[in-house]
Length: 157
Image (cartoon, rainbow, N blue to C red; front, top):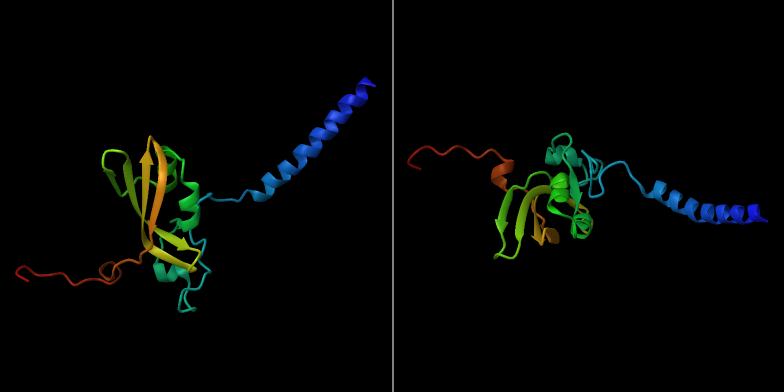
């Protein structure tokens, strides 16, 4: 009788752990939680429908394209070290009226709603008490001056 009780416990624990383990294995992906590495969206057609994302945006090898919804939802509550590991060093840092810190980044962002990658989006993280309190994503394409070579101005012009 003593052995049947331990066998029953073993069966119950296997019944609980097996679905949990399978869920973990199925839900894990190779790559970051927030983004796909490299040309993860390289096969997505642009608005014209013909060219690929990699050719249009001329993304460097290994550059991450972040999903807007992932950044807005999953970065909340993360500390500055975690955000810096994910995004790299910020392009700009500032104080926000004395009650928090703002970190700004220019990164390519994929917007699920419009099914478009905005190559020069402004992503701002606000930190309060050391944790990310909110994320603001402003979707933008690079300005014309950055995409096309602007002629150099001569002195006096």
